[in-house]
Length: 137
Image (tube, rainbow, N blue to C red; front, side, top):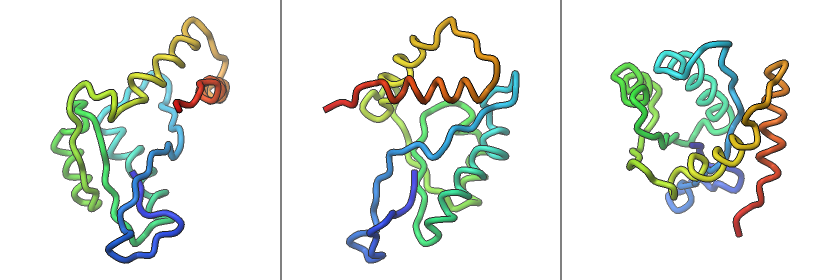
């Protein structure tokens, strides 16, 4: 999800850009779970704020999966209020969600059984393992 990047001319021919990148890692507080409240009060405002900071003139299209908290009325109202366009996600779609079927299982296997003393070490270790995974050709 993102707007146009560098090189965007702003005319109809070049206004469509595809962005496939992670903007940041957000850590949950201890014993918290991802739910609709976290999405609408923490995650979305922070993500969309960062995107809009650099791309005020471009629309944001959110591609999301079918998790129940993604489709709840409050989440939908929040997205509509922020002028976020939403596109659906068919179930079991390795081509649309490669992280779920390729990246995360590989990293999960490497992290299995490890104990971490603080949150920063978890994030750093996760990043190291992600960078070790060979890029597909």
